[in-house]
Image 1 (cartoon, rainbow, N blue to C red):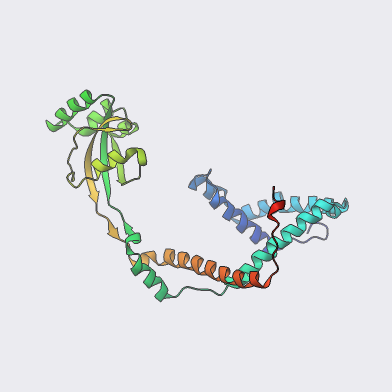
Image 2 (image 1 turned 60 degrees about the vertical axis):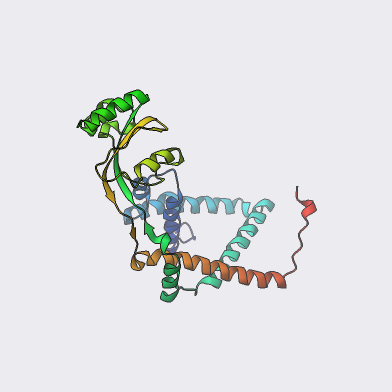
Length: 263
């Protein structure tokens, strides 16, 4: 308690859940940073209580002592928050009992099987040079038996040179639009395992690639896709139900929009 204001276990858990969920949405943090900053232990939860919620409660009570809740702009803001919170709670009430059946999941899977297929992945090495002449000379050496990895380390100008040109397993489109010509070569049916490409122009210079290994694309099973499909179908079903209820409520409501007043 802070004076007579209680902070309950349920309230603490709710704030912690909101905080953790907000971390998942942040694009500026790596997965490792998100994991380390999440409140996932009792000690972290106690620290959050002391450093955030108790501090908030102290300032809140100080605001009440000064009568800040009676300021006109504060009253307006609180009323707007009340509208937003109750509107959201009403929507939660509308959709809380909606669910997706196993039959609906299976039908969606069968109708969209192409969306649940893992694309082919190829492990490739690259050598990139500044000039076409140098690339052609390297290609001759490679065709005569020179080691691709060793040449890549010494003569390639690409970032991958430090790894012997190894790019790991990549999928079509993974490197971005500027590498569309690269994709055409690497994923060509004519270029199979252990094959070396001819010289081609890329965004970094003149390139030669070697295919180390090919992982064929495969169909992801229904059981593997079940959770994803269910989540997508549930969101769609909820939105459809909300749209239906809104359509009914808005017909019964008197809505006046004064567009001329909008500046």
